[in-house]
Length: 600
Image 1: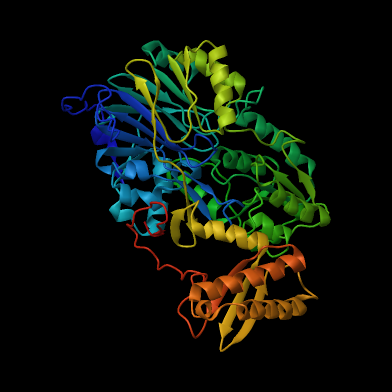
Image 2: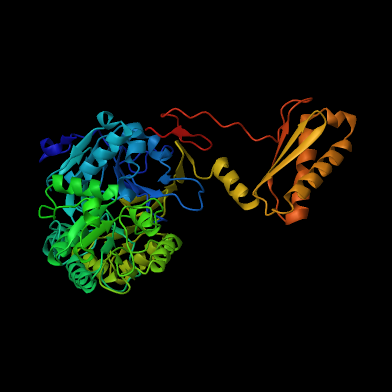
């Protein structure tokens, strides 16, 4: 990591003569204009990647990911497809990171080396990014620059200044981006908090002064636009947790997002105030606490006791902070619930969920809560007590920001389409003249002239599948979905004999009978082939495939994938499953149908 203080106060380098507005439409190089394009995070919540283009250069804001879901079976992480900017990497001048949540920095270790430009971040974010790069073994290859001040720094035609805003992590920031065509205020993730416990967010007066200077476009978080109430303050949560923990006599375990340093500060103060020793369960918590302390946060955090010491304390003298509030099967809370963790709970103990339930995690969370209930453990969520507030703005906060900033136009981001469309309606109702609803891949011209969409650029999703990054809509995932739905039948033909194996069919007691009948059907189908067709590998494989599938459909109503292996007599079958591709080199392109290695 390098400290970027050397950039303080420097003016942009002289720019080459700009091309006329609208030039280079074929290759979409920015001309004498200001462009915006989201490659991720506009149309979904997660994997935020935003681009600003001006006078031949591109600036990236954030490089995030999201976690694998049921729609991509067997995968770990999901990334935005960066092909558009990778094809133009010689014009990319830097990546500015707003804060350290995974949906804003999680893709950095997988793509930063290929993009080949400096990363800019405030100290806490830089600390966590540096750890990721170190773990990936590429720390020495990445130019990570620490911005430890709020002065403007310059990248090509862009002047950039961090604006501290409240969020559910230390050093949440918006960005003021100065351009030759007007000022952008890119909020990142934010909220309003009258009682922040970590950091000092910009005040209404400071934001009003920013608005007084003139703001062309407000590019704004849409996550909680449907919430009629403000998000609430961390001070309220502290009072709520203090009261709630004080009600319980046994062991208290509190699960929260590991990255929420303010909440960790709150829990440390609650433990001290209620006379409980503090134990931490979860490697991500250890990492965040260490990074926070190294950046000057959590200075008065209580001493942490190890698990063995914790289990020897009186039950009413222990407070545990644990990961796993979203139902993650390998996190600490899941292992506590199934009894495989050293931390033990029993009837009379309590678990407090100091986090919101992320959509899609309901079943996993419910499974853990049911296990805890079966143990006699008391469960408390934010629906029962004031023990959590969101890190994103509700409608009152959005309207307050509109009034302070008074932008000429609003560009909603960070949300599904319904969130962004609703924020555009709210902006219009609040008096913002221009409200642009866009989605991933929409290339917008913000200035000069009338704002609007210029083009639709390539966008999409990539997945981390084992050690390979590949297209989310590739054949591997499509096949995996089909296998999960209908199972697989393998037909082996050798020496005139037929052997059938079935996996995943809903046949248990009748499986042997089905296999015998399917083998007979395949043999009969092959016997009907003409002599010419019997010598054709494709004809043989297709006849066997259809016969086996018809047998499966007749027996159980399924249409399984059928793999035919010709072990003698004729050449390789076109119906045989393709061989597994070799692991792709790290720098292979990420185009459709291609894969690349994980170590990026």
